Image (cartoon, rainbow, N blue to C red; front, side, top):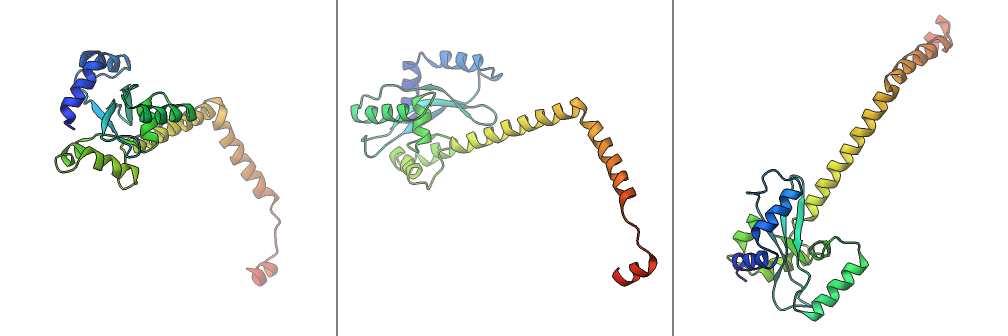
Length: 194
């Protein structure tokens, strides 16, 4: 598969690169004119003879975002399986479902270099068997961690602004009160037990 030719054909079928970049601009990405567009390549040995492009993704700072996804693969057997995946899970698009089920990869510069010596079928088969990452899962994990940290930060800020500082004062006062309530032991007892 000539990835550059297939990518251009895919973009043309989606309305062209200008429309795709406009959609990225609508997502709030500042460098929408120059951001790299990464093909999402899919392959399933059980359902298809060769790899195809299933979508286009771009790097959103912490994770890949799928901007367009294929809906029609001209392969009834594969489409039936994809429809089953879409019904099973709650996916935004077909490319996400394929990535989630390890039947696709977001193509990075590493895979572009390797595609000179390996076929796309071989590269995606490595994803299927778990010997290669699909570049999407790791980005989703990072994005999830960042969102969780952001939520914790907001909770912490809310606690502080709602009087959390008085809790520290109360803690100090209760600590001082605890010291007053400690029993005292005479010197002879302390020598025996200390």
